[in-house]
Image (cartoon, each protein chain N blue to C red):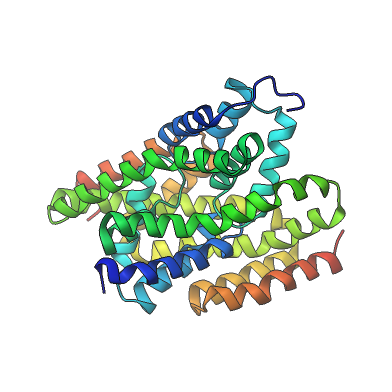
Length: 177
Length: 181
């Protein structure tokens, strides 16, 4: 299924993800991959990881992979529908609760809910990392690169784009096997 | 506006978030803070942190939610749309351009190899983010168990997220309340 016929499915998938994305977009990455690789076999997990990498190489919010999936399935219309579906429900919720939130700024339940959601968010983003590395680590060279890049991201303040460019350069040089 | 000296209109909201969208390589949040608080002085640091707290608490992209909330505060629904459109316009155009370029060249060995390196590094970025977010759990053994269970359900068992979250989120909040320090 591709072209305009894919639009309702795209809208449904990404609108659902919107309201589940606690802790930001990265927490719904595994579900997004499950939907477009397993449930609707639109692409392989390797293609999904490649689209994610492309999205990271572009500026702006970090879930642009949605735009790419939509574009791939149904051109510009698909890109717009997928992107709007991912952001509109959560945006509407933000729009409606912004004033209410200010009123509860000192309520103890707010800190409690935030504290309670943290382990779930941590588990989800760890799952995102596992789902991605499962298809991006293809041998000991890419495993080494992933480990080294993770350490660089954790221990230095180097700009992420520089590290991404370095990874791509290593690949182009053919040292990754 | 209480303390902020300037109250932006629709054009300023669009342009302000447009610049964030263009510069924001590898995470837009620091740029958003710089634009809203330091450069344009639309909000005080305290107001910004307060609003950011909401945006991190609600589902969805933090910066997207922030654009919507900032736009809404200054110019209602139209302001929210202006800020959102400004933030997304350039990144969407750029990423589609990259996608087209990649689709046309993905058969070339040099592109394939470059993509392998880029993809491995991009997944390392997610891994690093996960470790940073999990760091505060070091002193919360029950939190670690919940995080591991979530990981197992989603990454290994590949359970669908909606029912999984419906159980895990309230349970985790309940545990945090029951075992609060």
